[in-house]
Length: 207
Image (cartoon, rainbow, N blue to C red; front, side, top):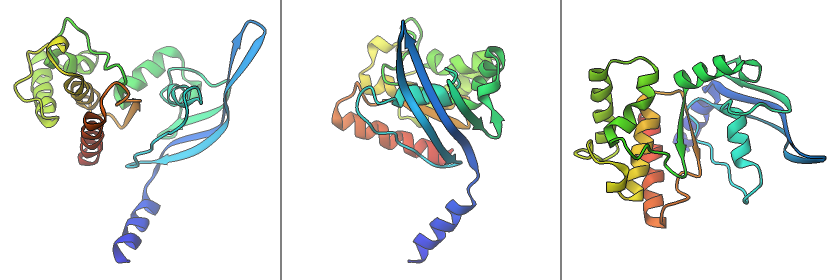
């Protein structure tokens, strides 16, 4: 099939964006050692959408935290765009996340006192983007996720699905190179979950 061959060739040309080499994570609780990740190695290419599936406690969130630079591996190496993030200090990894990474959370993590527009604009505040520009980008992102007219609503005035759409808009507002989503549909019903997953993949492919 020509389309399959073309798709395969495109994938062959895709550059590796994330590379994980022999990552191990051990948590210490008193004298006890808990092995959370055991010799994990993989490559993720630019443009790929990768899903991690496993039972509760199998290490999915720990792995995301490692690759996002929120935690340091006990052993191993993690590269994003060729940068060894496992070697960066706290200040440098924080700046790296601001510029390159967007997060979507299971529990939305919207600030309840802020409007939808203000929540979406938060990543841009830390980048020093002026207010007028922040509002322009925020409104465009809310419209893109189907929330035109919701700019002034606060989280308590929106459904779970709508709050997660705000979360997606916030994650994409800074035009990150990578989106990490930790169980983004875990608090949603099945129909809304399908809508949110479809929206996420659509937005990522468009960008």
